[in-house]
Length: 41
Image 1 (tube, rainbow, N blue to C red):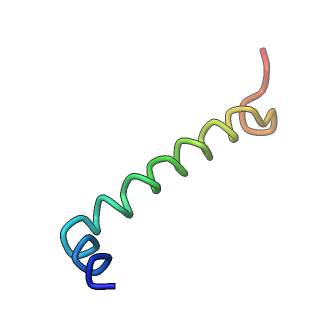
Image 2 (image 1 turned 180 degrees about the vertical axis):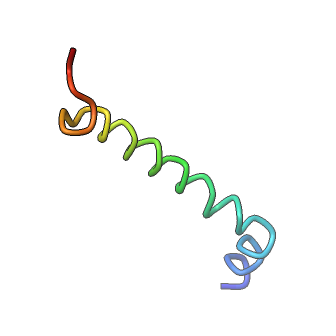
C-alpha cells in the first residue's frame, strides 16, 4: 500500500488528468455524432 501512496503523492495530478482528458475527448466526439447538437448540412 505504501507504493500506491507514494505514486499518488508524486503523480496524483497526472493520474487524474490523463483519464479526465480522455473522457472529455470521448464525450466531445459522442456529442459531435448527435444530430440534435450538430445538424447535417
